[in-house]
Image (cartoon, rainbow, N blue to C red; front, side, top):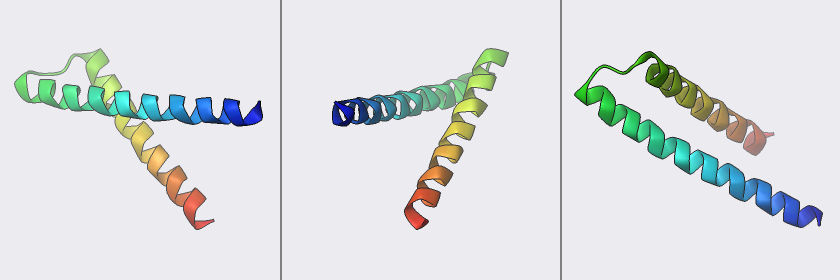
Length: 64
């Protein structure tokens, strides 16, 4: 049962990362066309910050 829960957690995390990446790409396209609204700008920086934190946590887990 624990293995199933762990697999579901990893799949959910992967789907969240992929969907956030697609949304970030869409926001970058929108940013080139027009000025982002305040909510879009907040989401843009939140996703960038989340990707940076995710990369740092991966590096820490790999090298420790």
